[in-house]
Image 1 (cartoon, rainbow, N blue to C red):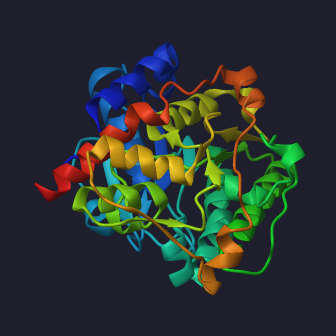
Image 2 (cartoon, rainbow, N blue to C red):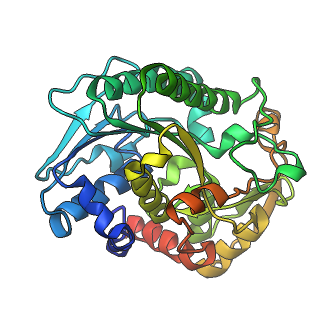
Length: 351
């Protein structure tokens, strides 16, 4: 079963243009390679090898499969691809030259990081250090997947939020293991760049979505899609006025691959997102309408465990000035255009 769209892979390759040849004959090592984003990256590199690159790149995917699910564990054998079952909180070794390290290992779903808070801390702190040490030894470009969550609850004057905003984040509560560990991960990138000259770049994605998300992920879009297609009540926490900006997966993958080739991105951090701000209630209505569902939208109060983690973050919108100036980044697709792609993916899982 495919967990991606061929048209998305073509679009990413087209957006890279001649820059894609910079990966020709190179080795890319990616942690978290069997997660939602990791699977998309691996498919893009496979597409480049088959259709674009003059000399194929070598892709080394690492994952401990803790949260990857059945989709992540089903590793397809293909030329120039190697999968290593690796816990990145343990030292990372690789025999051979590595040119690019993408550290995408992490536990991003609230459902999972509440179940695995210590592991969430470890992968973003110890795991990041281990990946940085590998990149430093190899003199490789290093990219860290941080998160827009590090901004916490920005005051209204800082929405849309620039990279220079220092964040309003609690070190306590159900989100803290994720938010605070991502902040430490960024600090590690800064320290390794300043102390050892490691070529680091950190990115802060905003609510990435697309085909391939797991139903058991329990984040808002797959949750709404599953409920709408099953004819179940669509459950909205609070009153649904909290808002987010949702970013389609191909936009994130394509932009990151451009940053990996850009020398001026070294030592920097960038938002990657979408300017379109959508309330959670509006999202539920969009999913219901595009699914042709008769589901009722039901509002449920935050339980005490979730209260600190959700109600205190009413808005999350990026300022994209910095990344636009450097690589010309602009979102290519909007939420209303791609909900059907997600719905079709979940329909295919039931067929």
